Image (cartoon, rainbow, N blue to C red; front, side, top):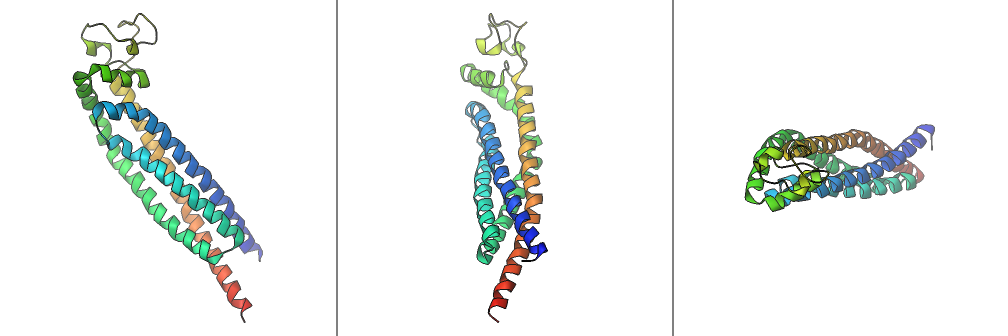
Length: 220
């Protein structure tokens, strides 16, 4: 094997090692978001907020498995494994690009609807709304004023007795900031992985071509 093929082989190996770690990061990020949004989803009875974290978890697991497959293909210099790996990576790239585009296109519209959804949930069942207050350390949709001089629940404050003076700020801003931050984070991670995956696919196809040509020469 020449110097060029040697470099391609090990660059591809370490690139896939990075993909495996990035896949785990995507899984971890998706799980973190999913754990946080469970209270919101239960309160507002909407599955829309679960789509991005669940998709991120699924894609992260698939990325990890295919990256492991790519590492084996690079080290063993197996043409079939490398070509199969490249095909799967191209499909995954399209899936992650779709996820990122959907997040960036729809994120603002979802975030803008959060105050209305939280207000409806608050008016419908204040007991259930306390789960959101506990998770996000907030108080009512718009702060203590949301309770209109009624006694505040313990979930509204960090210390007792809970009054308007030591109450948290409103949940609308807290939940909006959370979804804005983690929505952008998931989209950015997906795009970053895709940009590096494109290089890995090119290297994998180059290495597969080299292995195929080398196999042909041994039969002459």
